[in-house]
Amino acid sequence: ALPGDLLESELFGHMKGSFTGASSNKKGLFEVAAQGTIFLDEIGETSPAMQIKLLRVLQERKIRRVGGTEEVDVDVRVITATNQDLEQMVREKRFREDLFYRIHVIPIRMPALREKPEDIPALAEHFLDKYRRQMAKPLTGISKAAMDCLESYRWPGNVRELENVIERAVALESSEIVQPESLPREVRLGGSERPGVDIVLPEAGVDLERHLEDLRRRFMVEAMERAGGVQTRAAEILGMTFRSFRYFAKKYGLTAREGAPSGEAPGPEAGAPSWPAAAGEGAR
Image (cartoon, rainbow, N blue to C red):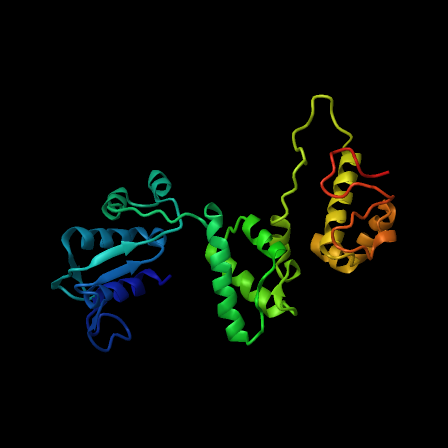
């Protein structure tokens, strides 16, 4: 993250008077890490000039301080990391091929969180314990509905995003268990993969308006069940304004059963199907 000149001084050190502010000799991190390990994060962000300098260090195990003429031997283990595709960068001439093969000795691929959903519950509980202690809140766990959302979301920001989501949930939750309503909207919606929604256009065509109306009604039914019949909460789950939700709820006949307990199938008439309903059922 440092500019090239500062990064060179930080890694390799500098001599007194080599630039403005260099009031004394300074060892670089490669020297400080002698007989140990130096970790270079985001190696893919380094400039072409710095890539050449790093390649020389890895090949010759020597450094030269900024403003100096003597070479200093270094003996360190180097670990690098990146979130970029270095092979693709090599093909695009944005990363030196010789440096790539020099650091690609023992590659370790860290899978994205979405590839290991079985890790999500343990990580979520860990972060919950961390932040409930920090905020001194008497939370005892995460509800099944909230955990289902967490496990179904794709987590483009990986573990850092999960930690931020749990921190937010702990701050907002007013009950003893984290509920879906304390999660960000994108996590709630990302955790609601609905079966039966066919996005492939049938050969015979489709009545798009009716299909969208049916889809809206089914999502509203599910949201009402999850919110225990509270329309304001159901509207928040779907990212709708209360006025818009109330309009469509009246249109679909959901208002008559607004206070129905969770699990009771709200609908426009007795015996109306709750989610999931087959495509084509719904608006009457």
